[in-house]
Each structure stands twice: as structure tokens, then as C-alpha cells.
Image (cartoon, rainbow, N blue to C red; front, side, top):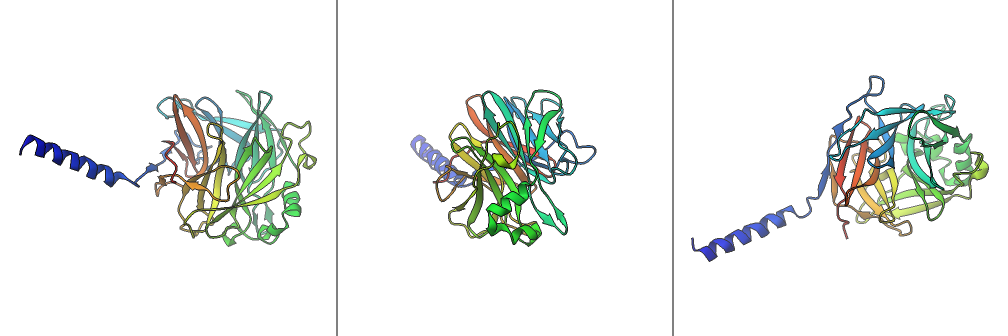
Length: 321
């Protein structure tokens, strides 16, 4: 083959290979945690960053504590997962914790933990907890009594769903994030859910107020957001605020356990009526329930925790226009 012919063939092959890679995106595949929670895999839900390569997450089967995860520069576990007891929260005050948000006030880190608020038979999950983050030991925490009843009085359209099981399109809140610009908590609904649409509830709150009571809550409002080119029934599995770009990162997934709707990651600018999908896929072995972004050197990365007892780190992908 003539040299110019070989060069042309090589160039053609490079273009063909590049074209074949388009649309494949990144894929999230879980790595099991090195530890278990008292013999059982961590049922990891909401997650928030509390320091460089340092995070806390929820085990929704264990409302007594948060759990601290430290990663090294290679995105592997650097220390044993530490149990951080929620000191001051009596048994039963927080049931089925799912959402976790970080709030910064005057150099202090507050962590807000939200129950799913779901109903199952005569059982009602409730609880909205505020904890002050410290580097070591138990976390001083307070539980807001009656949050579920307060929300249902203000968002009356949820009344019927609040009496249904989550797998019967009942009320099920799994995402929680802090909007620092509006001074509101954003609650993401896994259910009830509608095709091609997700629902958030905004609740203004003074997170640093002296007392953690319902008097600190402002008038709530409902936000409905479209998922472009989608007819799937998906709910919010988690939501977090990305300080670097000022957007919210939203994890979507099946709204009921019987659904086969896909898991997807998307961004939302806080005011648009639609999200923007990220070019990323979730491995079939993973059931992601918590997500946050973090910086590693000059790179922005995404940490996802899994209710099957694992986690994954992936580079922040491009946004699908």
C-alpha cells in the first residue's frame, strides 16, 4: 500500500472509531463498600460532602446515625466508614430516612435529614432532623415534630397519595437539597409520579434558627419539571446542589419497585421548566439512591451511593443539548 493510501486508510479508521463511540457516554458501576452496617450491607441513600474527599450518607434502615465515607485520590475508600450517631433524636422520631442536604451558615455546616413520609398500613414515616456537623464523634441533632402533618396541610393535593403505599403511587420523598439562593429546602418526590414529569416541593426555612420547630417553616410551593422526550414514569431518587456550576444534579429512577423505568442523571438550573439529561448510564447491577458532586484536583466528579451496599465515582460528563 502506498504511504498516502495508508495514511488515508488510517484516518478513515480513526473517524469511524470516533463515530462509533458517540452516544455511548459514561457508565456507573458500583464498587462494594469495604464494610457492612452491623453485618448487613449499607442501604445507602442521600449523600452530602462535608470536606475534601469526605462525605456522609444515610442508611435508610438505620435512623440512629449518619455514616462518614472518606475517599483517596484514586476514588477508593481511604478509611473505615465511621458511624456518626444522631445524638438527641429519640427512637421513632425519624423513620425511613432518605434525603440528606448540606446547609452552610456562617462557617458552620448543618446537615438536614428527611424521612420518606410514606405510609404502609397503619405505619407512618415522619421526621425532619437538623444536625450540626463536627469532625468527630456523635452529631448534635434535633427532630422537628409533626413535619409530615404540616406538609400535608400546606400541599393538600398530596392528601390521597399520603394514605397509599409507595408501590401504589403513594407519597414517597427521597430527594433533598438546599437552594442557597432562595433559602429553601427542595424535596424531591419519588411518588406520586407522572409520565415525563418530576415534582419538587420548595419549603423556605431558617436552618440556623435557635429552635428547630415548624414555626421556622415558610409557605411551601410545588414545582413541576419536564424530562425532555420522555414518557417514562420516573421519580426523584436524589437531588443535590452543585456549587461549582450553580445547578442542581438530579437522580431519576423508577417510582415504584415494580417499575422498569431507567435510572438517569440530569441537571436543573433552579428555574427552568425542564431538566437537561447527562450522557451517562447506570449499570444494571446498581440501584442508586444518593448523588453529589465534588472536586478532585481540576476535575469535577460525581459520587453515587447504592442501596445495595456500594458506591461509584464518575467524571462529570458533558450535558446533552
